[in-house]
Amino acid sequence: MDFKSKIREIRDFPREGINYKDISTLLLDKVAYNKAVHELAVQCKHKQADLIVCPKTRGLIIGAPLAYILGTALVVLGNPGQMPGSDRFTWHLAQEFGGESLEVNQDTIQQDLKVLVVDELLATGGTTAGAIKLIEELGSEVVGTVFLIELTGLGGRVKLTDYDTISLVQYNY
Image (cartoon, one colour):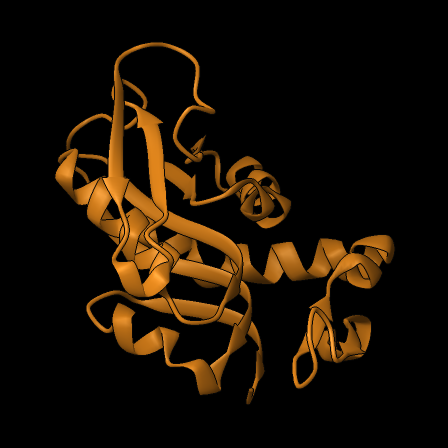
C-alpha cells in the first residue's frame, strides 16, 4: 500500500517553509491504518520486545495497537508534573532540544526488559534519544525504534545509529 498517499501535507504549517505531515487522514482510513500498524508489527516482531515505550502521548497512535498485536506491555513517558505518584524518574533532554524533560514512574520500567521505543514521527531524534537514555538508565535494553514517518533530512536517524530503526514512510525534508 502507498501509505504516503494516505498522509495529507499541509504547506507552511505551523510556519512558512514547513510542510506538516497530517496523519489524521491515514487514521480515518481504517484499512490503511490497520495495514500500517500490521506492517510495522511484521518488521519488529523478531525483536521479541517485552515493552513498548512511547516518548509522548502522540506515540500512542502507533504504540498502543502495536503493543496489542505484539503482546507487549505499554508505557508512555510524560512531561514533568503530568505523572501521578511521587516516585518519578526524570530525564532532562539536551538544550538543543529545548531543554525538555521526560518523566516516568520508576516502577513502570523494570530492569532487564527488551524495549521498543515507538513514536509517530522521527525528525531530529532528540526526544527519542532522551527516551533511550531514560530507559537505559533504568536498566533495560532498547532493542529498536519504530516510527510511522521519518523526516530523513533532519538527521534523526544519526542520533539512533546504535539502534535498529524502522520507519514506514520517509520524506526527504
